[in-house]
Amino acid sequence: MKKSYEKPFIKKIQVGLMNKFGAAYGRHIRSEIDGVPVAELTARYGSPVFVFSERRLRDRYQSIHQAFASRYPNVNFSWSYKTNYLDAVCAILHQEGEGAEVVSELEYQKARRLGVPGSEIIYNGPYKTMDSLKTAVQEGATINIDHFDEIYDLEEVAKGLERQVKVGIRLNMDTGISPQWTRFGFNLESGQALDAVKRLVSGKRLILNGIHCHIGTFILDPQAYSRAITKMVEFSYQVEDAFGLKMEYLDIGGGLPSENRLKGIYLSPDVAIPPMDDYAEAICNTLLSKLRPNDFPTLILESGRTMVDEAGFLITTTHASKRLPDDSRAYVIDAGVNALFTAFWYNFRVELEKDIPGPHEPCTLFGPLCMNIDVVADQVILPPLPRGTRLIFSPVGAYNVTQWMQFIRSRPAIVLINNEGFPEIIREAEGLEDLIQRERLPKHLKLS
Amino acid sequence: MNKLSSLALNEEGFVFDPTTGNSFTTNDIGLSIIRYLKEGKDSEEILRSLLDDFEIDSDTAQRDLIDFLAQLRVYRLFEGS
Image (cartoon, rainbow over the protein chains, first blue to last red):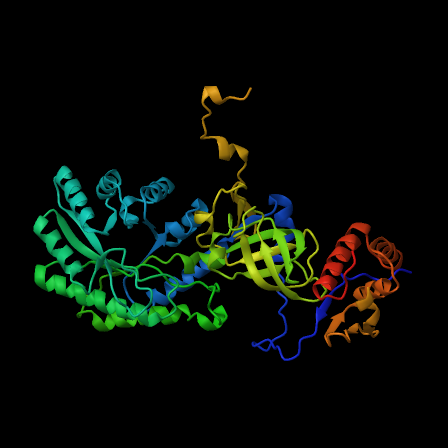
């Protein structure tokens, strides 16, 4: 009778080193996503595969919307396309009631193609082409101006159309957070923002009716939003009193965090990240306390990351294991920073499809790219993983499927688990054809 | 090899290196491999012994053995191949 086998290991006993969280190594198991077994998803769609949950996305929108709408009477959400512009994801959020917030003509066209009317699009960003500005004006989009040259461009558009055009301007300001974003919009404290308004007014072709501000990203201090709102309201009344211009909206942008773990942050997300109600409270209470009686401009939020990050998973598979010269364990998995671009700044949650016996140890997870920086995760505590083990990364719903790279390997498929719990493909895996379809080989270079 | 012969082992997988004073913990299979090494078996012989004694396929056992020997080398408990 043969004895049962377990992968051999040997570890040096180190006295005095303790896990400062006081807990034993956690076992993180995820055998299914929204009721669909991981094994079924990989059998049908291969590995790696992104999986989005419609239910989680809708639930998240509804809870964030509720947090704000129950505190302020005039709230509007606009979906940040750059965070995730998959048709299916955008359509879910549009169905829920979000408009589209776009930052390029490409995103603008994508939103229009999906059926979003121009009047429900907010056009932001530092680079807006003349043609796209003209289209946006004609279709009634909300345009937030980023710089003085854009004022000139929009005046030219207005002149060509022989009418005045309503516009907003983007402000940047000190809200007590670091780094302070100063490259977008007009600076408030230096007087540049007021100069922009004066310039707008003197041109007589543009009518300022809104103020936009986006203070940064992954903001962990709700009071930073409170300070931003205070300054925006004060500025809007300064403009109203000096020029008779009424601000119809205050757009606070995005920057709300997801429940991801930023590299360099010691605490776990459930401790480090304030609940969404704290943000809603800070923004709405400040707004209500600073606004003049019976004045309720539209509060616009362009939340991206916080809305979609937790709705996304990436299923991967271990391809090989390595023992590095420092005795640390490493695995090569089938998805790298080409698919998970946010690995550069997040420590994702890494879960196993099933429990695996054996001693846990800190591991590095390398992607499949022949490139030294392709590290998806390090210091992940894992048991000895046999070849072919499924690892599930989350949250990965924000920015990966817009910033991913077609480098060396083609992009994986994306699946949506719909509200009924059935998986549907929403983006097919790419292949060689996607790589070469736009290439043209000059005749004299043909090899045969 | 000399280092291996001086190692103190017990049935619970505790390994003590009297030269450095370092202690280690290993599992049943690890203990068996160290014992085989102490007996002077080479990797091929150890592999055959593992296949005889345990419920395991040849590929997995070979992979794990290579990895385990690499660990022993890192800890300077073994210098052979």
